[in-house]
Image (cartoon, rainbow, N blue to C red; front, side, top):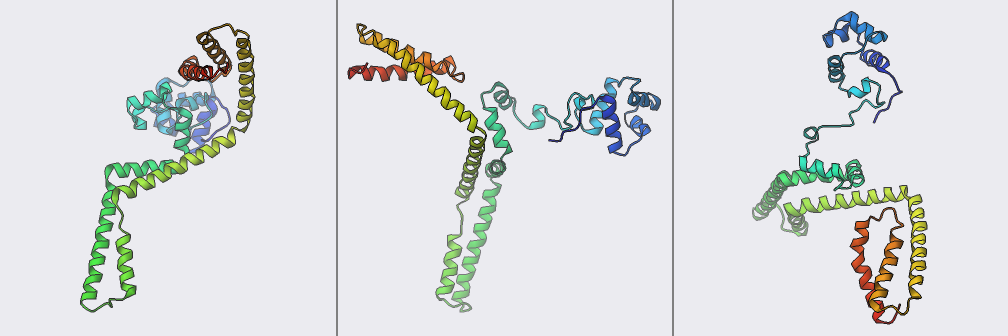
Amino acid sequence: MSRYLPGNVRDRLIELRKTRGLSQNDVADIIKCDRVTYGRVENGTSSLKCEDLIALAKYYDLPTDYILGLVDTPEKTYYEIRELGLSVEAAEKLYSGKANPRVINELLLNDNFITAVNRMAMYFSESMSGAIRTSNELKDFTYSFLEDLIKGGELPNDRETNMLKNEIKLSKEPPNYYDTDRIKNLIMISVKEIKEKIDAETKEAREARKLLDDEILKCMKQETMKVQYGRKLSKEQQVKKMTEAVKKALSIDPNMTPEMIEELTPGIIKQFEILSNYGKR
């Protein structure tokens, strides 16, 4: 994405006009504005009308915010759903966070994933399958043609000719498997590349995660030690208190939501119930 120096409306209008080799009169004619009035806009003595701003944005194919000097990137950073080709339901999943935006972003930036998506589009339309069928038919024709030449005595029925026939036969591709195998490989390559990229970017985050895990473990030990002194508690009470101790320790993690902790709770209870059966408090 291109980035330019900050500027105001006057700076941007002059910059855009000059980079396209236009005069003030040319721009005034393009947006059907009075020439003197437009000159005053560039001089900073008159304001740009809303309709003129929209007309300029359409002509220069830029967002209005860039012309106004509110952003420093001339590329569009927002699109209507119909421009993106997304359904309302798909856009809602992105907007609501049901689909992880970081993962979606990385996938769309990955060339192998884009190739896989385009192959999927061909696969769904059966255009690639049709091309493979045509290729297979050509190979069948070549195979039959070689057999006719052998029968007519124009080619020897020797080892070399039979090897060629065998290669042609083995080179035929099942249309569906051909497409899906390549799509799967491209997706797996893209996932691996994204994982490597994220791993390289998150070394500090992993170190911070280790410190957090150590803190959680320390808290867990401290809380569970408190329960150890309640030896007169029933088995059910001890399991309950130990579970609450673990949940309290997990709540230290800022990424762990109350819903996530509740989802883990049955597994924690089960673990302590198993341990209590062996007398391990």
